[in-house]
Amino acid sequence: MPTWLDTSIFGLTLFVMLVSLFGLIIPIFPGILVIWLAALGYGIVTGFETLGIVMFVFITLLMIAGEIVDNILMGAGARRGGASWTSILVGMAAGILGTIIFPPIGGLIAAPSAVLLVEFLRGRDWDKAWRATRGLALGWGLSFFARFGIGVVMIGVWLIWAFVRS
Image 1 (cartoon, helix red, strand yellow):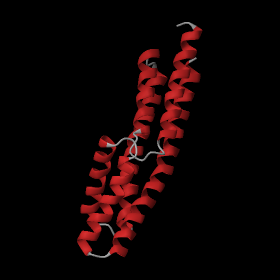
Image 2: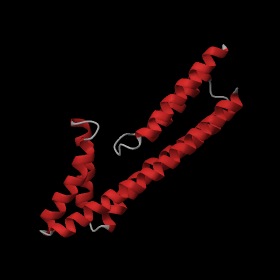
Image 3: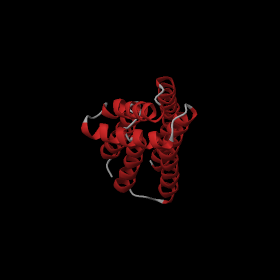
Image 4: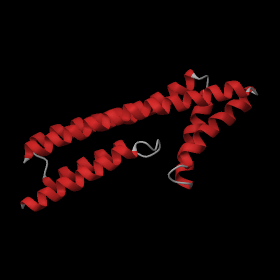
């Protein structure tokens, strides 16, 4: 493969990964998944040699961990704030629908609004409903830092793969 093509593929993959990493600021944006897809595309285009397979498996495990930790931390934050499982599930569904209907910020508004409303309807107590909503927001914040760290590691693993391959 010509050097200019190698450089172009490397640059495009890195660009997509970095945009996805900073896209994690939007809680509903699947940045971890997009970083994984960029690594998959890189492997398909450049070929999966032994090192590439090992590195891609590691990137895949990190992606799975990032997706799981995201939901665990948001749900745990809401639960710590006193939210019921019902309001957490309704909040997640509202976040997804809000993002689909009014991207990219619809989910940011819909999820906490749904938790607040469901918790208020459950207990008729605004203080408890706000506490649950604040817990969800705290969980989102912790989730961002965890996903961002995992994304940085994923990109680092890919960089090792790309440089050793060269």
